Length: 321
Image 1 (cartoon, rainbow, N blue to C red):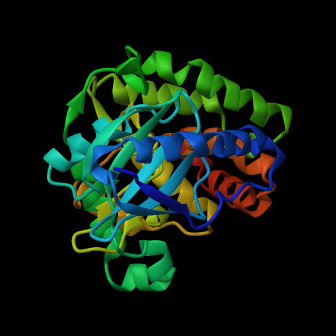
Image 2: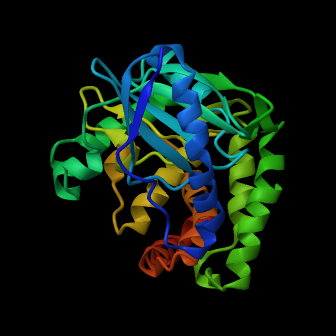
C-alpha cells in the first residue's frame, strides 16, 4: 500500500556559523525521514503529514501526523552526544517519572532516532513567568522531580558510548577531554577571572564529595523549564544523557537559571527536601558547569548569560576556599 507523505515545512536552520555542520545534517536527513515513514508498517497506506519543529539545536524533531495519531520522530544530529536517550527515558519512566513514552528507537542512517508519544502541552517556560513558577511552587516540584530521576543507580560516568558509560570513575570524567576542552576555551578567551575562583579547588571539593558516593545517577544534563512540559505531573523530555553524580546535574540546572539571571533556592529545597546538604560541593558543581557552558554561549554571543554566571561565581567564591 502506498503511503502519501506531505512535508508541511522545512527544517529551521541555525544562523550561527558554529552550527553549519548541523545545518547540513538536517537537510541530508530529509530523504532518510521520507524513506523511514514510507517503509514503516505503522504508516503503511496512510496519508502522513510531517511538520518540523522550529526549536532544537542538537536534533531534528518532526511531528508525524495521521488521521488517528500524532507522534514525534527525533533524530540526533551528532553521531555520539545523544546516545542513550531511549535508555534514560525508559529508566525514568520505570522510576515513576512521566516522560514521553518511547515506541521504538534505532538508527536512521548514521544517527540514532526515537519514535515516541506526542505530548500536547506547552513547556513550563512558555506557560509561566519566573514569578509564577515561584508563586505556584513549581520550582519546589521540579527539585523533587529531579531527585526522583536520580534514584536509579548506575556505574560509571559521562556520555553513553557503546551502551555503557564513557568513563569508569568520576575522576576520569572530571579530568577528561570534554571538561579539559571546555576549560581550555574558557582560559583562552579569559571568561573566568581569579575573582571567580579556581577550578583546582572546585575539582578537589567534588572529588572529596563523590569519593563518598561511588554510584552514579541517570542525569538529564539540561533540566530546566524549557525541557519540562506543563502537565500534571510534569513531563520530562529532551535530556542530554549523562551518567554523573546528582550534584552535577542539579548544579547544571542551577547554572542555567543563573545564566538567565535567576537563582531559585526552591529548586534546592525541593531536591534535598529540607535535609542538610553539602553546600560547597553544590557550588563546585555550579562552577564546573559554568566552565562547560561558557564556550557554547560565547560562540553564540550570549554575553549577558556569561556575565550573570561570572557575577554569581564572584559573589560566592568563598565557598571554594
